[in-house]
Length: 371
Image 1 (cartoon, rainbow, N blue to C red):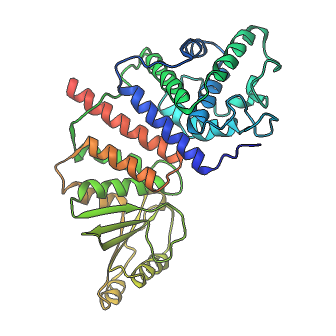
Image 2: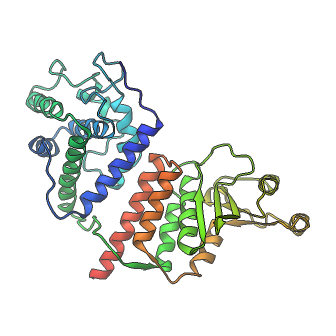
Image 3: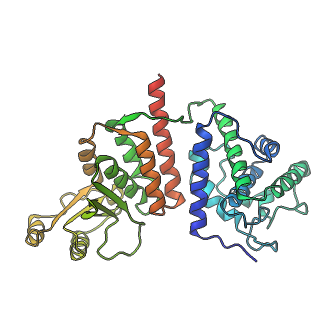
């Protein structure tokens, strides 16, 4: 029997990895796991492929303990074989986690399973490997086989990341990791965070996260912001909905690529036909410089129906809303970002760099407070 790895598995892996990294960043005590000696050995060993293998196999087991912790490819004849090499690229390497969070300390490889022992279908003592690497390979096999539950795997990943934190701290640029903070941060400083967030990821996901969190932070109760899953077909439904006292208030269409005047009108018409009275078309940096998109006849035609609309660049929205707030609680911003990532099912390629931007904001605040 094979283990099929779908998008949900990938997203759960990315979320768990980021959650455990957040924990590793802030705890002041040494966590423990069943394979501490092996983790220490691998992370201090020259062969970088084994660093990726250990983290990937443990994380897969942490997400779902049914996966075979020794298999690399689904074509393996072992039971519950899964594609660990694909999981590694989508969650750890190509997603940007190693580069952004771990500062490339594992080796900076985008496809680590394409070299050395990672090319095999599973980790086995029958694998061909350099003679000097055989003891480590065999130790790794025994260690992985001792991990039987998801909780044991989570404990091992947390320990792995905690050791990584120590390695990063010893690098020349040692002011990297955030500590817990209950501080507020001025909107003047969060402006850069939201601008950077609007640039990350794919398919406008970063821009949508930036707008959703911006609305969430700028507008108080009774307003409630809802971010929908990006690029799903929803006729008459925008990407972000704003409710007031649980009633429809304003719907947003988000665009991060070039568009035409007729598209704005079509989106607005669909939203109004679906029962919305207010519609905003917000475009990001990928759309280029649009100038004045809507004209007076556009506004007048919809005003006759009692409908209001706008077409504005992201930075105009950003500057307008940040001017209405004095400061932003970091804890609230953290909770807002993670809840939108979860509820809108944001993929790893956007979620990972988005969460790293938030970590870096915390670092900046703490550095300013301590310096």
